[in-house]
Structure formats: C-alpha cells, structure tokens
Image 1: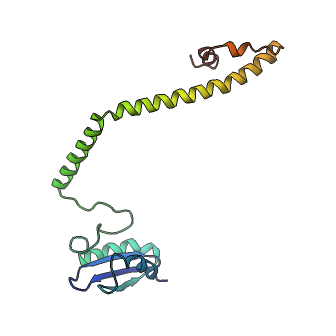
Image 2 (image 1 turned 90 degrees about the horizontal axis):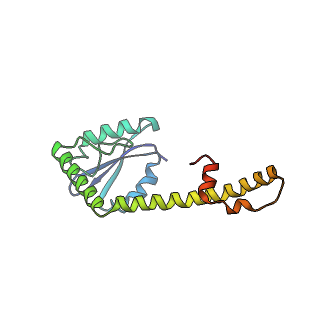
Image 3 (image 1 turned 30 degrees about the horizontal axis):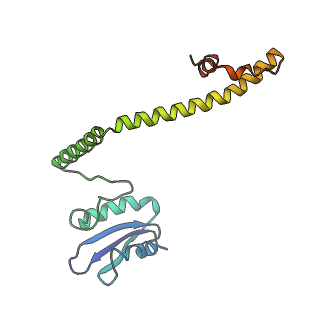
Length: 166
C-alpha cells in the first residue's frame, strides 16, 4: 500500500492524469474503467507522507500541465474545485444561474414553498396543542381537585393563549 502521487498517461496522445492516494495500488483498480491498462501507462511519481499529498499533487499537475492539457479537472489538492476562471466564463455562469433561478421562481416555487411551510407549521402547532391540552388538563384537575373534562371544551386559541402564544 503506497501513499503518494501517481501518473496515468494515455499511450497514443501523451495526455496524463495526476492523482493522489493513501493506497495507490487500490486506487488504480478504480481507474481501470476510465483508463484501461492496455491504453494507459501507470506510474508512481513519488511516495510521501499523507500531509504532503496536496502539495505534491499541485506541483505535478502544474509540471505536466495536466489540468489544461490533460485529464485533471482541477489544479489539484483536496477540495479545490475552481481554477482561475476567465472573466467571461464567470459572466456566462452567472447569467445562466440567474436565468435558471428566474425560471424556477416564475413557475410558482415560492408559492409552493410557502404552502409547504404553512402546512408544516399548522401540523406542528396542532401536535403542540394536543400535547399541551393533556398537560393543562392534568394541572387544571390537580388545582381544581376534580376530574372534569372541561379542558376538552377549550378551543385551540385558548390553549395557545394559556401557553403564552397569543
């Protein structure tokens, strides 16, 4: 089990993929579907400590230019998803997202979300009322010294007012 940085190179084009792993040999098995061994060369570039993986991966991706001219989708290192996008790309993504959100909002999503929230709140409020009716009845009966069911006659607003939710 090798910890380190590896390189997978397409035999015909020379394009490569740089990766990091805490178990390179095991990781290669996962890559065999995307990078079949009969079409790609596999090699370990460096063995290192876990803490050095991100640093080495970034360095080798830059050295082999495998982000721009290879198979790496990022500049490397854990958690790095965006790499130096062109301002025009940022603008296009922004416009696309605005259009997507505008379309969703025009289809009545806010109304649907409001209805869902209101339905949920009403359901929770009813559960709250039912629970506290039983609690209030017990306290009421202890205070009154009787076992009357007059609490059942109280409406929900009365219960909420008694609980301080008026």
